[in-house]
Amino acid sequence: MSPPPAKPGVWGRLAELRGPAVPPKALDARALAALAANPGCERRALLDGAGVDKAGLAEGLGSPASFGQSQFAFMRGNAFEARVKADGGAELLRLVHENLDPGAEPPRAGTVPDLTAAGPEGRTARTALALRDACAAGVWTLLDHPMLALDVAGSPAFLEPDAVVVHPDGTWTVVEIKSFPLLDGSADPAKVGAAARQSAVYVLALEEVAARLDPVPDVRHRVLLVCPKDFSNLPTASAVDVRKQRAVTRRQLDRLTRVEDIAAALPEGTCFAPGLPADRLTAAVDAVPAAYAPECLAACELAFHCRARSREEGAVTSLGRSLRAELGGLTTVDDVLAAARGDAGDPADPAVAALRRAALLRAEALRGREPAHPTGQAALPEVAPCR
Ligand code: SF4
Image (cartoon, rainbow, N blue to C red):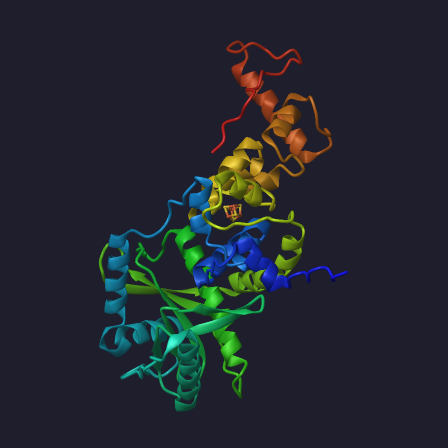
């Protein structure tokens, strides 16, 4: 009797999930940062860990993603970045000195090493050498689009920050250049948050490079965010502390090794290959637990599919994370309405008590304008509106 066929290892299993001959999609800093923004979502962790092309998958599901940068915004961003880095990065180094290291000698003519090399591995090695040399030189050094590698569940993810600055004392700073404006010194918190999460990924990657040097240089946890000032094209900057985002991303990346466990729980034959019929893809995606929140709309290609599923299930997560947290054990809109009516729920539960109080106040406000519920409370709508 011939032995049973050998079970594929974790990488073989992930390749099966991707589909035969489908190359893995490389993780970039934006994807890693988005992963950290929704750490509870097993669906995203599995799809990213397996290198599934989520945009292609969303197309196959019939719910294509709609976010992304317009060509105009892309070109405007590139023009702004070129302006910030003009003259050997003189303005950029001035902003780093002013915002992060005013005690150091002011930068005069910074060094900008050549980082060109063949392939991402070659560029990563070239960047590591340039960082080591800059530490030894002890002068302001600007690394323009360096290449960094971060170990993600055993495979390298290649990352390209806008810039890394080496200070005269040998410490390293990540610089993110964005085209959204800083108005009176502050910017859209959601955009700043996304930039901070992205920068935290670069900080982690730089720490891996630093750990291989002796002595180990310090990677600063305050990064520099450079944006246009007000409605002009003049650069201005703000220091952003990314310690929290760094810790969350580190935890989330460590959890990615659990991708193996998530994959093991899936039915035999589950596959996310683009080109499979929509019903097969839907069944495959629905087999992996998700944690939808409205924030997914700006960060994940599967957002429209997951939102539709969340609404079908009446899940309160589709109404936002803060509301979800306040509702405790009440996870569906039906549960919430039943608790508010007094049909279900433990009156000692603070969420249930608050809902009944709110229903009572509403009934009092509407008394005489709406027929009363048989329990004496105001009639509640059968279906609550979802976002
Ligand atoms: S859109 Fe879906 S898969 Fe993506 S993070 Fe949100 S819940 Fe997870």
